[in-house]
Image (cartoon, helix red, strand yellow):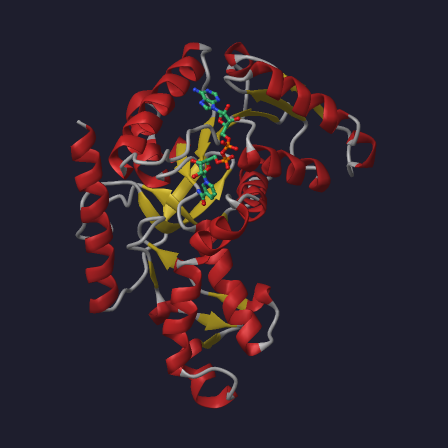
Length: 311
Ligand code: NAD
């Protein structure tokens, strides 16, 4: 079957994602939808002029919700940003109603593929997308803590001067202020990070809190300097897309339902999961220490409270 991706929301995040897809040759047909139709059309025109430099033959065009009918993947990066004087809850209410209406329009086309969401607050909005769609939770996925995890791995790799692909560590929980590092399951190559600290000399226990702080505040720091962050998330979304389209069975920390693996509220939350052509194959169960389990519970409670506020 043709690998068709529909993107809803052609802003900074959405277009960074499509730019990554085209440069890496991920997918075959890409359809752009935005409430601002002219924007989607202009983006498609611009990208078409670069297609001759893509590693494979691809098609990009603006479209509408009927295009979702035979799509493998619908990616949602549509939303509004916080206005001055607006509370987080007001923003959440606005974006929740945007996501509900987008998901209803997508489902109205007869869509039977996979949803991938990036719009913030991503965990809560993915939960709402799942409830609205009626699809199994394995086919409604949020980017979760995948970007935060990429930032974490980058920071560790910089500190120890080892290639980032050899750093295995996750940020778990809410994609937001209550996220935490699962240090008990952090490895460099096959060596636990605790052993690396003992033997390698380039990283000490005191560095861990600094690394966590840098990762947690990364979005604020970027937004302060350039108003928005988008290249990182665009590339992460392309990586997740590749794992789905190429049936990779890849482990990525995503916003998923935890399937009762942990004694926490049943909400969408950032956990490592195996992802392939069917969506989430399963959530990977980690052995968390007491502190990490408490942090995961706290994060899930925050997400549950926000969901309850929306009702
Ligand atoms: P943006 O304002 O540049 O783009 C949003 C786009 O959505 C606009 O083109 C707008 O016209 C469109 N839109 C709004 N309502 C719509 C609707 N009902 N239907 C279709 N399109 C609609 O914003 P951005 O910088 O691209 O950010 C998009 C979202 O991604 C934000 O919620 C942001 O917080 C989030 N984000 C998530 C992560 C992550 O890690 N998950 C990282 C960065 C940003």
